[in-house]
Structure formats: C-alpha cells, structure tokens
Image (cartoon, rainbow, N blue to C red; front, side):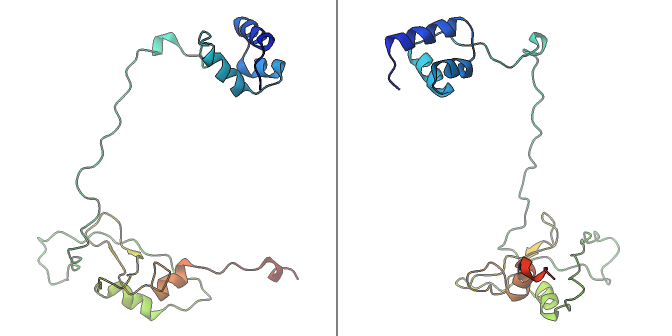
Length: 177
C-alpha cells in the first residue's frame, strides 16, 4: 500500500481516538498488521495492553518452577543390563522392581515365540548393523533396555516388533456390505 498524506492523517486521527488496530484497518481498508507497522514507523504512542490485569497482583513474585531430577534417567548403553534377582538370593538383597505387563496381542493373532526369545536374549550390538529400538521394561529402572536384535532395512525395529508397531490400515471399502 502507498501511504498517502491523507491516509497517514486519518491513521493518526483514528489512533488518537483510541480505536483498535483492527478497527483502524477496517476503516482504512488495510490489514491490522499494516496499521501496526505504520504506527511503529511513525513513532505513535504505544497502546495500552488489551489484557486487563489486577494492579494488586502485578508485583507478586511467582513460585519457582520445580527442579529437574539430577543424574541420568536411563542406564548407560555401555553397561550390560543387570540380571534379574534369582530366588536363591538372600532376603537382604533389594527386591527387583515390578515390571509392568505388556498389552496382550490381539485374540486373532497367535503369540510369537521369537518375540519372547527376543525379550529375554542379551543385547548383541554390532557397530555396523542397526539394532531394534523396541523398549523393554520401565524407563528409568535398572531393568530397562532395548531389544537389540538386528533391525529390518529402513525400520527401527526387528521383524516381530515391526509386526506390532506397523499395523496395516484396513480399506474402508472392505467394511461396505
């Protein structure tokens, strides 16, 4: 837009009348942002905030945000996962943390023995082969780890975990009877 002397005079007049930038824009046939930009370039006085605030609460200090937990939240990948506590361990040893069960597979799908084997097998990482990133256990606990089996090409998971993660979307035309 070309700001003519007449348009600038009207802008100053409407600004002094206390109209909102959106209303000034409507009356001048321009956008609100054009009004704000021109008012800034003309050094017009700042508008009061449209947010109504209670003067008594303006100087009240805020509560500080809660502090973050210090230390690592996940075990180091360089260390092997700790072995579960066996029943032959003395009672003085600390109990193993409770493991939350994983959701059962759908009824129409048989359980995969290779998935169970993958969950109990130790992690074998090769520096070149991508490993399965399926999380096993509760994050932040000593028993938390990733599957570690070789991942499928182009996927972050091994075969059994990719079957769980990637569900084929049914075609809506199949529902039509």
